[in-house]
Amino acid sequence: MTWTKPQVTIHNAEIGGQTVDGTFVFPSDIGLEYEMRTQEFFQSEGTLSVAASSILDVIADQTDTDIGDGIRQELSFDIGGGIHAITLDFRGYTGSQHQWGATGNGGSETDATGEDLHAQMAVFDRFLNTARIDSTNPATLQAGEYSNEGRYGPLQVVPENPNVRFNSTEESSVYEGSVTWVETVSLEQVIDGSKQTDG
Image (cartoon, rainbow, N blue to C red):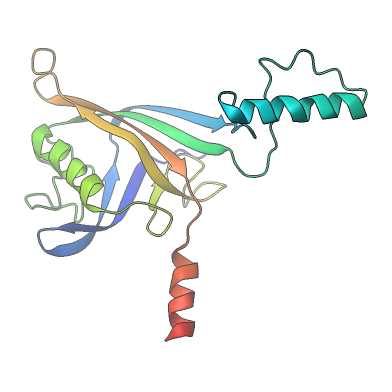
């Protein structure tokens, strides 16, 4: 078993007139959830549900398959349309020495390592807001076996519903956060290769 502290690197954020990468090592009270979401072939509402019902009728007529009444059933194919995601719940705290930004030194627009929780929350938020994180510029997630030291290697991901929360009445030096990192196809090499052949 390999346990690597979860960390994500956000690439090509535009902060303070410079383009920077930031690495965020999530320090404590980690929760990890691995998730697969199946995508239905047809939507279950609207006009497409009529098409789905018709196809299910054809399948029933031409095979011995008993598909029931079809009212609450969906037609699914595993053609890569599903989603693989890792939800990371974490806590951060004032003075944490885990890298939190571009340098690991703190004290700048691009790094809040060792600083108070408000600086850490703001820097993380700034990276998420100023980097275009998509298949052309995915973030890199390492967590457990999905890491350089693990059996599967890091994942190329995009964030879904990232949030950080601070409640001054409950904790004065701790904040909580959660991000679902959705695995994505990386088009970086395809785009770089096309530029070289065009150029």
